[in-house]
Image (tube, rainbow, N blue to C red; front, side, top):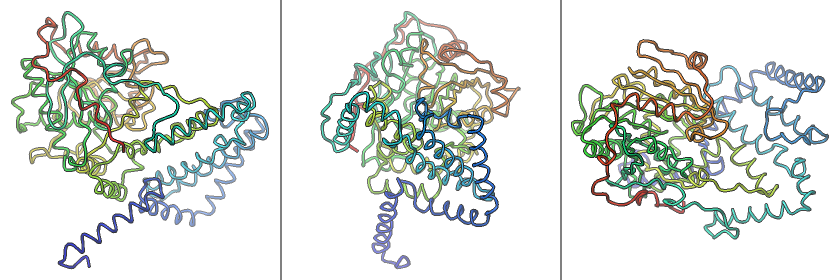
Length: 574
């Protein structure tokens, strides 16, 4: 049938096959059944031909467990699930130690010699999901913390938790919650730094923030946030707002607010995001600031797009419209990847069958929904983001108090089908940007054309952008690179306002003629600093600027609307 000239029959067959694969993926938590089957087959063959190694792993696991018991050493001391001292008493100690032993054994036998590295990661990830679910900490009968709390509260903790569980169910069904939650209001509690929307196109609004000092730095700051979530991750409540901090230090800040796409935007691609998101708005900033050089900043995927834009603008063969854009004064990358050879834990979801599955899902609706993307990240940290949270909320009756970051995290966005497909194929699967194979205006761009000063930030616990991957900017560009390794994760490590407790970072600048190829060598050489890295960044920006001007010279002219604009309010039920 597929060879028939009747295209309608072929298209129907393809659509039916696509429906089958999407339906099967629902049984595997959104993972491609083909990808899982390939990894499982690879593992099964190597397991069948390694009986002696499996026996060795088994005996070694038992030996380590017995020796630890003899030495009264707790093998789970670093596992927050078992932090309660009551886990050290029988029978709870036996349950957690047995589960730890099983986890240790599976960790070894999913990494068999000869398996493809990606298949090892897939098997390890999939088995970890099951083991996290089967942890004794998730069982009310085996968790001493749950039992003690039930006894102390005479069951009130469970009653309160079940009420919260019912509210969560109602929320997922689109019904109003029975218990009121603390809510943040966009424009009042978050995204409330004063400013004006000065430009709008189909894909983005451009916000110019109102100066709060009498004088401002001559060079403005242009920020490209990730389009996966709403922009105000960088403008949360005033105490956590990076935007407010920069404005209060005397910087003129411009920020993109991405539009939340719908099914009609299915054909928007990376070129649209580059043109309408970065280049068009850089031209507007150039016009509004009389052509002075611009400090550019990109966060997460926004940093990837910014790196592409700066490389294209730096290319000897200028891209269309480059004459309307002022020179780039510097480039700051916040938890951003330019080289995708090490995608971290996200790599589990990135192979040809998985990308094909995502394309089939998006073909049905024209976009990847925010909930589908959020589920991917929840998978990566299921132990912390799902199981531990559910135990705390439902069985201990301790629902999380809504914070500005949690409110933002729930404000999900969609991604157009064409753009997301191109991004996965060209960046993740083929690493085209780092290899100099990504084309803009029919010619490849090279990151080695970038020669402006670079300030890059990685975070220690980042499961989205491993800091070693963020560090690759020092190898890919011909720039002086100042690299920061901040404590925390992908979001909390970037949100590091002065005065926040338990914050620290490492800091080291690499001149163009003194590269440090190994991230580990850099980490050994870098100095450690307690506190927020924001002041160091502000000092760096000032050092790469040309002085200050009266703030009134940077007033927003002909504003369209007050910040935060209109695009940030667009939400969908999916």
